[in-house]
Length: 474
Image 1 (cartoon, helix red, strand yellow):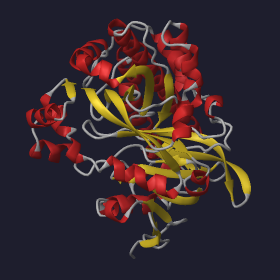
Image 2 (cartoon, rainbow, N blue to C red):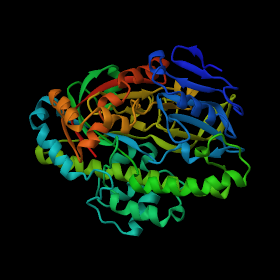
Image 3 (tube, rainbow, N blue to C red):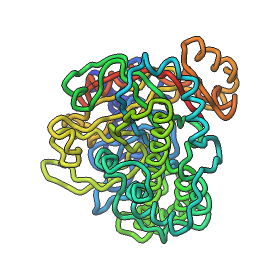
């Protein structure tokens, strides 16, 4: 069977595309971006549609590409009664997310010092594969990060109270169960708190170079020519190990509970089962660790800016999660229902009607942060109530890869990528030349086209475009 165009930017994977589908699939994508979606990604959308208790549609955002079990850019919601939870719907980097600091500085004042700033940030925030941090926390302190998230870091002297207010879940989800985090995950997590990591993670100094919505920009504290700083990282080795450990358990649970899955990467367990409760409790620990991690990195970023621009203010605009499963209330067939919403490479995009939107943004909607790819623009959007109708309150999370890391290494060299960035006036620091090649801007979809899809659908509207001036990569 072929996928069907429902309307501009909406394509349906019909029931029957593969046997066992309980709902249809929906891919929110433009016709040009659809050409970049691998057949395997569409297969994964169909596969997720076979899982017990799925509600509405199995969905893929415009940045969707092939992932583990679920597509990256995948969204699926499951009923509490009869539904499941699946690590494949969250991902290995649990609560990989984005934090955006706005400043009172203008680009023309910062540009002359951009190389110095990037060097200082690269020194202040450890990065790279397996990097260890400046912190030396005890096992008990690690448990505190699992239970209390960014609030623990605040009490330890990092950040300010307003950071918690302007953070999804106030920087801490409830339901954490540290007893479900294994020794190996703890061992990996302790030395990595306060580190950027590798892959597509970055710390970026940006300039606001276009405002699309003046009212929303004013509420978000954004103006043209302004300096912002974006932090993109997650739960590091702790989250990866938690996912790995629980996948092993849930692979056996599938057989124990007689769940028929078309792909072993969709390992899952019925909601309410001991295996599901164990995974959820451990996943929340990783999510809280990730919020703590970004909170600490933001604190060190402020220290660097204060060194060169004394008295400068870098308040938190917002912090969003990209890889998480959350219990939320949504309208299903005219009734409110508690659902486990899996967002894997997708951003919550709640509109003004939701009480979860911070008071500072009440009546307008939550900020939605969409990072670019080193040489391309990032975007700030504002969540809309239309997202609740279409996507369980979800939007895209980035540009989305169109080329694997191994393919990128064959086509590009780090030297070439750095030279290209230098020509565009973008200062870059990375732990290895290979990392720059793997993350070359050409390996991603155009972020502007991805953002236009969710804007045109009314899921989240464009507020501002941010262009990179300096980038620290792992």
